[in-house]
Length: 314
Image 1: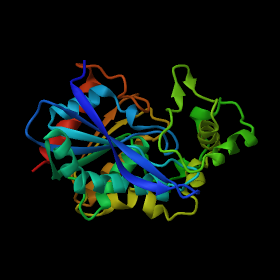
Image 2 (image 1 turned 180 degrees about the vertical axis):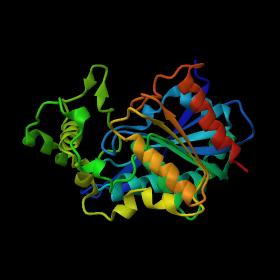
Image 3 (image 1 turned 180 degrees about the horizontal axis):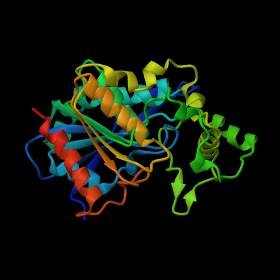
C-alpha cells in the first residue's frame, strides 16, 4: 500500500482556436511523513511525444523517490502532431520545470505545510521523457542532476530514418484513418498509453500515426515539423561542459531508443568533462523497469539511480 498523496495543479494555460483557455496540469506526489525540507523531482512521462499522461509513472518508483526526500512533479504536456515537438512537448516540459522551481514552492507550502527547496531540483524521465529531462540541462538554472531512463536522443542519427523492425508485423493503416488525428485540435495534454494488455492499441488514429510512421522510418521528422533540431534534441547539450550530473539506465535489447545512443551520450558527456553513470542491462527491452520487484537486479539499479540524485543535492 502506497503512503503517498497527490495534488493536481495547473502549471500553464493555452488558448484553443476558439480563444478558450485550456489548462496543462501537473500531478504533485508527496508523502505526509518525511523531512520538513524536501527536494523537487520533475518526472516526464513517456509515450513518444504523442501519447501518455502523468499516471504512467510506476507507483513503486514514486515511492522510492519519496523515500529519498523528494516531492515529485509529474507534468502533462501538449502532444504532437497537431502541435510541433518544439512548441508542444519541449516548451511545456521546460515551462513545467521552471514552474516547479519558481511557483510551486509557495503554493505547496500553503496547501500542505511542506517546504520544498527550489535550489534542490532534479529531473528524470522515461523514453521521450528522458529526452525532455536532458533538455532541462540546457537551462540557465539547470537541475542538480538528471536520470535518463532509456531516453530518446540523437535525432540526427540514421536510426530515426530506418524502418522499425519492431513494427514490421503491424498491419497497414488506411491513410484516412491516420489523418483523423489532425482533427484533434487543440492538441490533447493526456491520452491513454499506446499499448494495452494485449499489445498495441490499433483502434485510435493517434496510435496509428505513431505506429505507421515508426514502421516507415520517418516518425521523428513527421513531428519535428521544420523545427531546428537543436531546439528539440538534447544531443548537442551533452558535448558541452557544465552539463548536470547524469545517470542513464538502458537495456541492450531496446528497439525504440537504442542502447548505442546511451553509449554515445556517456562518451560525449565524459569527453566534455561531465559526470555520468551508465548502467546497461543486458537483453532488457524498452520500458524494462515497469515491472521491477524489490530485490531484483533492475530494482536495485533504480535504487542506485535515485541515490545518485540525492547525492547531488546541497
